[in-house]
Image (cartoon, rainbow, N blue to C red; front, side, top):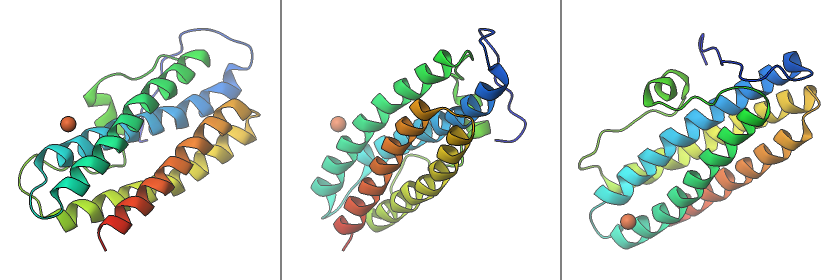
Length: 162
Ligand SMILES: [Fe+2]
């Protein structure tokens, strides 16, 4: 996440242990927010014979992502840090490459989303290890759920493209 530094909001016991966990949560928040917008972009702009399938599945996925950003951000707050809340911060932290709105081949849309979800699966796996290492099983469980979602989303998008 480059040199992004989270701002502490509360001086809680074990803040040293909490900070790296809040850091990986902030990364997930930035990735999730960026993928949320990208998923919606494709939901809006998809064209062609796969329109209904992609339009419908992306709606399901962006709804999940929208709820997830709230959960992730509020976990950061519970750990005693402020949640990043601007596109500028997300762009700094996110590993998801943005795509401008416009015409894009539907096969490419599916491929880029599958790749994004799969890259988040492996990123989140590392984040779970960070949470576990710092004794935060609540965050580890939350992130495991996120990993499961991305794995399932990738499978659905992959299957739709066949
Ligand atoms: Fe819609």
